[in-house]
Length: 287
Image 1 (cartoon, rainbow, N blue to C red):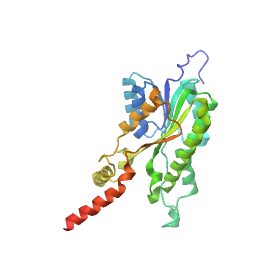
Image 2 (cartoon, rainbow, N blue to C red):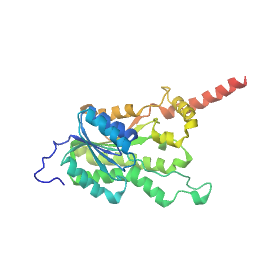
Image 3 (cartoon, rainbow, N blue to C red):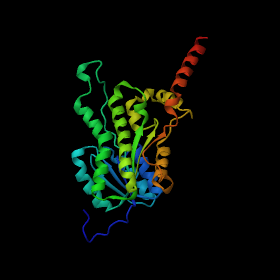
Image 4 (cartoon, helix red, strand yellow):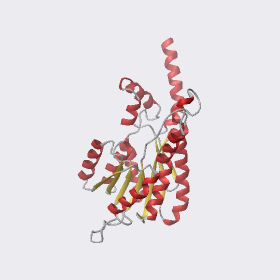
């Protein structure tokens, strides 16, 4: 907690980003520092110090303050202590928007292939805790500490995994489905208090995590296929995702509530067209 002789920050000037050093979380830190011009409190597990440094430089270049807490925001048993540390930094009613950008998941098959490799209950629990349950636990922790400013926005980052099937991502898909359900119920409960709870579902974006999954020698081919899955002919970018979060954080986003916002650019809508295009190309080659 802040000491009594320390000045409290002005109410509602902070964005709390849970998972802030890479990917969408990092891009959102930079965007919110510019628009609507918030100071940034970022949590991360300490795995990407170079990313943290780059984010901090960008936030400070925008004239805003950057503070860090190295913590595992997806572990339920740690959240109370972490929320105390956040409150000590941002003060009562200090958080204007909290963005849940935690990604710590296990992948694997449920019941096919080698039984020794099936998803273990510990893996399932970890994935659900980090990618779904912690969204509720952080909301509860911030409410108990009166850390949310009037009209605060509570935002979950979502994706389209639960709208398609990829065998080894079953638990991630299930956790995202749970996350969407939590968003709707929290919006119902907190809407009368003036808070706004939403999920932003975006499509495949080029990221370090995606490039880690696919070897460098095939990444260009993977990217080309992904680009064709979008009606616009390309993947959306982290910067586009972050810019829309700025909209949600501003006055123009005040009426969004209980929404699973489709920011995928129609990615899943074009899958069958992609299949037909591949068939047509194969026919033309044969002809």
